[in-house]
Image (tube, rainbow over all chains, first blue to last red; front, top):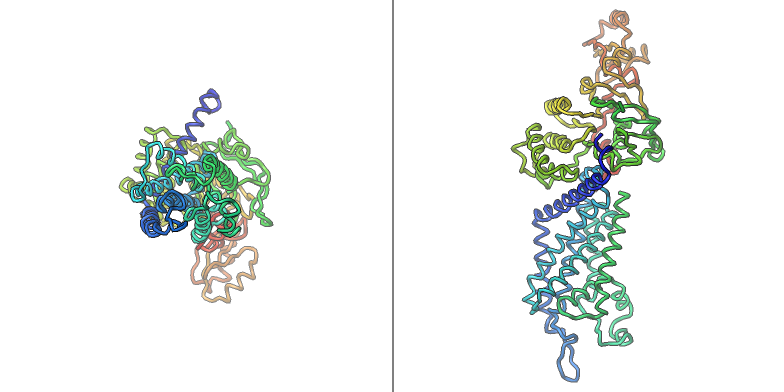
Length: 282
Length: 325
């Protein structure tokens, strides 16, 4: 038994190297599977095209108000610019949550057992999976970024770097959320339906397609929008995620600029913790 | 020398069903050890406890010096499992599956490559290395799974029904691979099966039924102690069958159109023949085999309870597998 006589430090080093190797293996596997799945890629491309080129350009002219016969924009941006960061969030959302299907897949086809009997800790396994899903989601987010010129956005490298960081955080949090869902709903079909039932409401109430006008006071907002909608938007964490992305890409924030990144970090930490709890029991 | 595996008073129940009652045995190093029993006997439960994916209700399991229940992560390093149900990633290629396993078990890159090539050679899948696993036949998948189990330096290999659903030729091959491997490096093999003929080549056999161990010994010793001569009889008329069943109620089992009778020896056989000889269509005398050992220990034939596809599916579900279709 070499293990027993080895120096403890060496042992620790070996253990860390082992976990890192495993982390890489699981991450790489997730990414590889996503690349091979053409359907996912098509969805990742078609969704932003639909939202940016058709929805965005189509609704662009209507996104303005008239005060005393004078036309001006509600916010100092075109609708296309306004919706652009939200579409990035949407694309990341879909891909992240969907990537958790691999957890269901692994359970169904027995691969999960192969991983569970390996000398890796559950946290490493989950981290690898979430990082893999998040990488793919981040890539799908970048597919939207390519369309930036259609939205008349000129991005500085610093904007892009900050934006990518926020996107990565969002992808990480949402992939963890997907794993939480996958822990409860164990069939492919159920997961598809349920994840849509989560994604779309979260998206629409995240002030993504319409703004809660920041120039209005709370009382005025409540007059313009029904109370329940305002409450929903205020409580939806995605609101702040979208707001953070807007801050990065169009320098417009409806809320305090620090709130968006803070919520993103909190989301990533909370959902990962929840996913780990569910996963350790699996 | 410490045994490779020590199982001490292990028990497990699922709700009200008792899967294992107070099971204890040792497996020596370099031994090939078979768990033989019908489906539902508790073999798979026992194996799952040994490979740390299931916690027993009571009792301890040691692998080498490690307590499996207290230190599962450490114990897993020395152990490799081939499950009853396939656990390959069928969207990765043959090579990628093996490589993934090597990475996860921390096999250094050079050694990993070298070993994967050698193993592919061994299980004759070299030409298939770049093929997606989903395109392989089930026999090839099985071989790949066994190869995968050997990518890292496992000292103990658990195989849960490794040859179920395979044709005789593939089954034969898999056993050949295993014995070749055991001659090459220190490897303890624990295998569960309900194919009696496969167990003959193992060093020791543990017969298990309804959650408890009935006997543990070498095949030869088991045969000497519990083996019996068996008469397999096919009769001209069904009426005679029931008559024989009535005459020897404790010693007969019906299987298809045959009756199997535990014979006390040649005298018994002669007496039997003189009485029913004219009404017999076909008769064969079987010398003591493990099958008869099993029959005399449990009072029934093992194949009687070999699970059908549906039963296997249900068992899989109970053990935590998921089915959506």
